[in-house]
Length: 270
Ligand SMILES: C[S@@+](CC[C@H](N)C(=O)[O-])C[C@H]1O[C@@H](n2cnc3c(N)ncnc32)[C@H](O)[C@@H]1O
Image 1 (spheres, rainbow, N blue to C red):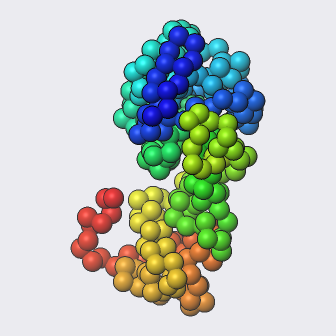
Image 2 (cartoon, rainbow, N blue to C red):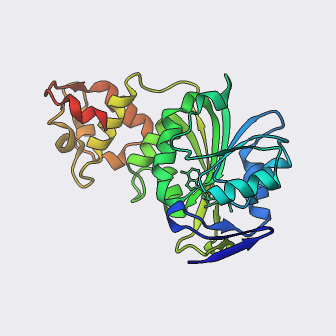
């Protein structure tokens, strides 16, 4: 276990909380610059840790909210940055509505690898409360979110995120700027929820995307025939694999399908 000592606090870095702390001072400034936040924005930082990104945010926004799960680090941030509203708790459980206070949140964070997907889907599910999310995560996950069609990275994550958000891959961050040093590199991406959802039945679309990509090597016809009446879909489209279709093309396809009532409503609630 790596011991970290910083100012008046020392902790044993906890792997299960994804505690890899940024040592570099320029990267946090770059993240804040790319986030586009301005004074007056409602900022929410996920996992401030020892405050590497916190300090850079404070140069632009004099006060904001941060959620930190680790008790010692929460105490550290309270002592170092009393102007911040520090919530000691789990981002995945914290109610976001009161934090948005009738507006929208600019979310920033160097997020723990182990809960990247739950964080992304929580933000997606609460997109009406989110103005933007600028997040550092495992490089491979950032690539999958920003992937383009007909690449091995393109799949469920890319389609889910890009259908509802404008996604921009910003820059890669070497593993060497963290302590303890992780086994993988990181990258920063920015996501801005679209003004309007491209589909009405968001849950149905989520299910459709999972089905379409269920067996990547299979054609759309083979992956979908069991669940939908495909009669309104051009035959040429059904012969393709899901990975060949762009996000707008998948949205169009979803609009052409009619669900077959198989009495399997439970499957919708994953
Ligand atoms: C990758 S570290 C980043 C720390 C700091 N922002 C930095 O860049 O050096 C992730 C941080 O998130 C915190 N954390 C882990 N799980 C969390 C959760 N569910 N909710 C809030 N914070 C969490 C960890 O304790 C840690 O401080």
